[in-house]
Amino acid sequence: MVTWMHYLGDDDGKTNLDGRGDVDLYVEMVQGPSSVISELGKDFLRRFFLTDPNCKWTAPMLLDHPFITRNMKGLPPVEETQFQNNPFVIYDRWIWHLLHNVMVNMDMMDMIVLRNSFSFHWPQDGLKATDKITALPGEPNGVNFYQYSGYVTVDPKAGRAVFYYFAKSQNSSTKPLVLWLNGGPGASSFEIGAMTELGLFRVSKAGKTLWENPYAWNNVENVLFLESPAGVGFSYSNTSSDYIIGDTKTAADSYTFLVNWLERFPEYKTTEFFIAGQGYAGRYVPQLAQLILLHNNKITNQTVINLKGVVGNGHYDIETQNRRTYDYYWTHALISDEIHQGIVSNCNFSSADPPPDACQTYKSQAHSAKGHIDSNNIYAPLCSSSSSSTPPLINEYDPCSDNYVYTYLNTPAVQKSLHANTTGIPGPWKNYNGYIGHNWDDETDTVLPVIKELISSGVSVWLYSGDIDSVCSVTTTRYALNNLRLSAKTPWYAWYTQGEVGGYAVEYENLTFVAVRGAGHLVPSYQPARALTLFSLFLVEKLPPSN
Image (cartoon, rainbow, N blue to C red; front, side):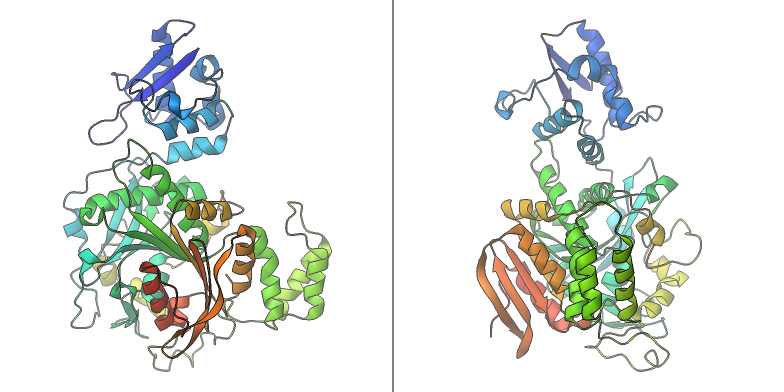
């Protein structure tokens, strides 16, 4: 008995499984009337894709659906060659393999991926013009680039929409498109990425005026900042349960955002596309890239995203991150020999069991011993009344900059100019949503296999770390890279910019790791010139210069 499914979408790409012939079930060697199987199949698909508001079944309930228990459980694995040339068999090879894992192997993760990965286009007519920013309050005179910001709906039914800010480059049509993501989870890509790192402006100490960042990345590319997931920054949902989220749903929403944003800005559909980010975006970036590749390979896909590369300074592997952070503390004189040895001897970071009391004691001692410093930059001053009273310097990071941005973005006139907070978010806008991070319910232990998959797919991968960052340190990243077991093409060397050592680099096959000298976690903030140099080279696939 073999049952095949065929889905025919509407012209606008939306799902319409309403029992009017949109789902055809092709049946061979079936036991029982085909009409019964057809109706069962249609009912299952309605429930599976949640197109019927009265059919919100959980995964276990779906697996007990009669269509599965009667007709799908007995299916053998199907080789791709058996159906790839038969238009009457199956609508999508990738969907088939996922369905087989769900129905036969009881793979819940594939069910989640399959359901969440169905992204649909919604009409975007006229929204680009609506999103254009005339001018930001306090903007300096003579700004000669276009800015856009606003919302893209990723789930109309839930009322879930994400906020973006887009800065075009000069000669925009000849420049690549880069999506920037901050991590957390729960951190704002607009406040941190756009307003304190690589964006067009910096905010004055009074929080009322802006000054141009000469090292803004839109000097070399079109930069798109996304506040993800819903609940972060200005992004929101009308469904409170959406704020309990994880890796899989975040990637799915980001993909849905992209395909709809590209409908709004169709001139970038064929542009070379890159994804960049830091912190927990070390997960977001490769997971989104993986999802893009999956959709690009679908024969029914309407939007092929021209993904060329990913770059990040992030968390890649939980065990390595937890274990090697203490090595970084020790090698940078933040903790004593005794504390470090106590952690090495008593903590098993690869075990899922709760750590012993001795491990917890030494870890607590480590965090106490390093004192009250900025983990993002272990040598940087903290924000104080004295630091906020001195004039800002272009090449120096201001530790109080978050305060200035907070004041600026909570100004009603600023929010209006950004087309933000249109639903009236209660309370002040914040750059970090702790509820999102504390309730993260789907965290992948490691994305190293995903990174290896991207490398094998020909996607250019650059990883970088600031050498005075203890959050995503050089040490943890190098140990994570060792787990990939890659062979070096260009051995470790010093790279130069502006006549001095900018850091160190090593090139592997389709992956490059770069250490940035004198940079903390927010590399473009602490070393803006070096960061811009590196990213400019990444876009044209050139290694940092050795002299």
